[in-house]
Amino acid sequence: MKFVEEIVVEEFLPTFRSMLAEDLRERGFTQREVADALGISQSAVSKYAHGEVGRRGDFLDDERVQQLVTRVGEGLASGDMTPVQALVETEVLIRRLEEGDLLADLHAEAMPELAGVDADFSVHDPDSALRTTERVRSSVRRGLRTLTNASGFAGLIPNVGSNLAECLPDATDLEDVAAVPGRIFDVKGRTTVPGEPEFGVSEHVAGVLLEARAAGADVAAALNVRYTPEVVAAFEAAGYETVAFDPDEADDSHDSDDSHDSDDSHDSDDDERDERETDAIAAALDGRDLPDTFLLYQTGGFGIEPIAYVLAPDAPTAARVVRDTLL
Image (cartoon, rainbow, N blue to C red; front, side):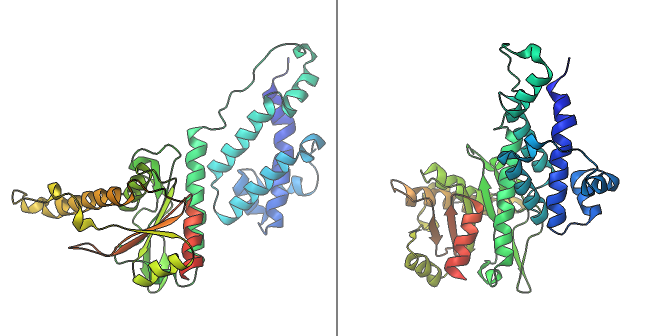
């Protein structure tokens, strides 16, 4: 009796790891860095490098395995992909190969008794929540790298800071949106990102993104930048639709009264301002046939800094649009 998992361990993993080790070495990784990235010993990396580990041609020649090696190697080298995402992506391919595919064929060769048996070995969901969240975080990382590498982006960061956010496909609230904790700031002319993308850390930019989606916009990412008339003109010249909204024209039902305690007045003002802005966005976008990339902006109001928001299908697109249009 031979389990398909044994074939994975004995045949697939040695081949896949050796291919990935080779890819990382070609990208300039040291033997120690390869070992750390793959979670294996340096001696194992050395064996891979000297051809002391058997590699199965079925996997070496499989285009999907080759593409995964390239994608994981590129992601680990750039920092866009975490070891967790690399593991998930590899697990997904393994499970696909187990289901009536290459691993299933090799399993059938090892276990002829399986012939003619209607068996289902699909034990992993390729669309798992973990895979999806890791992909969104990876997407935000790619967008952030575009911004930090773009000369001059720091000058577009408003006083309140920028943020780059992307949401899950079926996002309904702030916990479904990944963004930079603490926002992106201009530190002496340098675009500074204080931490790794996380879910549930953005209220303002994430709120704008969710409101745009609620209004029917087919977008999944948002990036805020400093507003100037020149910013709007540049987007219009590049062929993008621009939409203005005015928070001061929101429903007066959100006006504050004199009953707030002084200790809570600042938080109440912030909440009221965000709610008025949300109402204004909903009114501005209502009934519009919106493209997948557009500029949403407001020119300021009482206690509100002028801000422009780039809405796009994903974080890298939002970042590239800002770079190519404004820098």
